Amino acid sequence: MKILFLSPHKDFADFIKSYGDMVLTITGSVTASDVNHGDFIVTYDYHETVPAEIVRKANGNAIGLKTAYLPWNRGADSNLWSFIDGTPKGVTVYFLDGGEDSGDIIAQRYLKFDYDADTLATFSDKLTACLEDLFKKTWHYIRDGKAKRYPQVTQHSENGKAPYEHVLTNGKDTLLKDIIKGLK
Image (cartoon, rainbow, N blue to C red; front, side, top):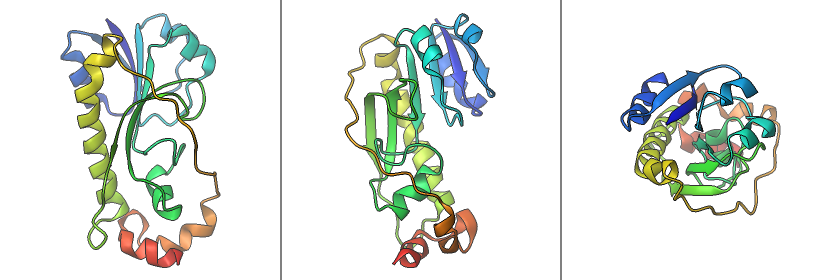
């Protein structure tokens, strides 16, 4: 099978290759002609929405990996928004549908954080490790066309991040408890 892997995490492509699949890693924009060279699309930490036209060409064989507990915190800065909005924290593997992180869910994991010790950066690392583990445990079902679909039913409202910049006193190394206190 040929897999288009849209991600800056080129090293993670080795897991997909372990199934004997050929992997083409793309870090920039994907084009309709790229899809002609693949049987499946996998996005991971990909900072662009894959256009609906390209998703359709993939015939249902396009999934995303997201460090967010969808449907909450779609788009950029998911980790930060989960604290600002007080929404669930976790990771999701989902089908792409041409929207922004809006396709049917395949698998999810909820993740707890350490209020006194975690920063945005350390919690992001935990989310990444959890997401990679979840994908490794579900990829064979997805690849074989046996993944179940669960529709998303709600999403958080998009707010501008600027009004909350003041709580990031130490950037991504700000303790999560300080972010939460700053929001009160």
